[in-house]
Image (cartoon, rainbow, N blue to C red; front, side, top):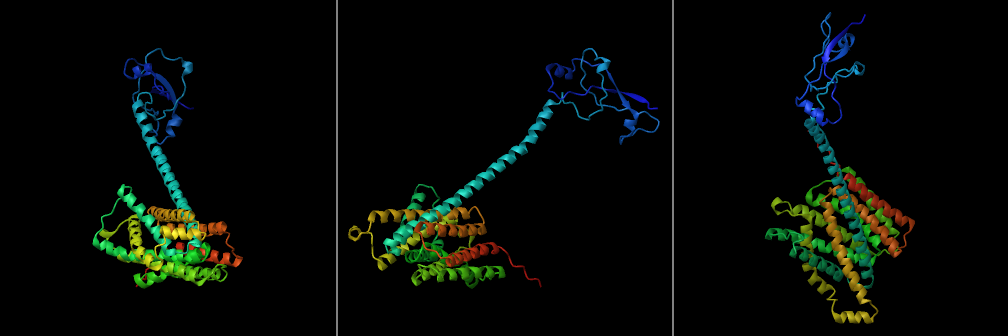
Length: 426
């Protein structure tokens, strides 16, 4: 037979927000008669805190708020086990603090998520601008070089426009003007020389062959980077890197054999551009090693742009003469040259050139070099496809296959370059 024990227990607190009357009761303005709740001994003895055998289990409860008024009728009495939750009605401030504390991590997570999304959108916008400015540069540059056969003069104009933009930013504090020491200037001069030659050779190639073929040959840049790094920096490539160079060389060779606009002047100019551009990267690692002499990429590019203009101006006057005199333009207009169109497109090409270089360095400050290298590979694909469509360049199936193999090798190179060789164990 099941016996029953009686224990003293206050009514369970309501989950609703306490009213004014209940708050007064909590402050001690009344009392509540004792309610009786029946508790089965079998339920009590099944708990971990069982009472000794033969004794009824009686639960004790902490004091609660007592309310005044007549007791409720017996019909409303219910069997309620103790929930173990302390005074919802009286501890209002505590519950409010707990809710507020739990909502803070959610808000912080939302802010972090929105900030990450904003950074992703900003990075995507920069990549889009990088590709767009590069497309416009190659199209306008090719249009000018087709009718104005002076690549050194065109290159000098591009450096001149870039120098004006750099000085404008420094003058109006849009970008911090650097304080250079003599040693820094002497270290940057070799970089400016190879930078000038690299852009000059690129324009010479664009003036001789199609834009798509020039960029296909420029896919050989990783090959020259590996060779020069091994020769001057002692960085020996891994077998994975060497393996990725094979499709690059093979693809460029296949595309060259089937290129409709192929000529040796354009081919060797593009190769010379690869050599000088990668020499600039190697020199930048070799000479800019001291932390106190280091500077960010945009500042370095700005200084190199001004130096390149200073270096190229006398060389251009010696090689091609000064082709921007009113007398020359008048003579060129009589021979059928649209002088206004050439000037406008030369200016647009120069602005696009400097813009895509600036955006490229801005991206490099936000992503890893491997990610930037992959983006550069995709950029080359975009430029080749857009130039073929715009200029309606005839492309044979074998030529397109060779170009695709070379670009796939560049992408593979950018991925395997980060694989580090295992250290040799003694």
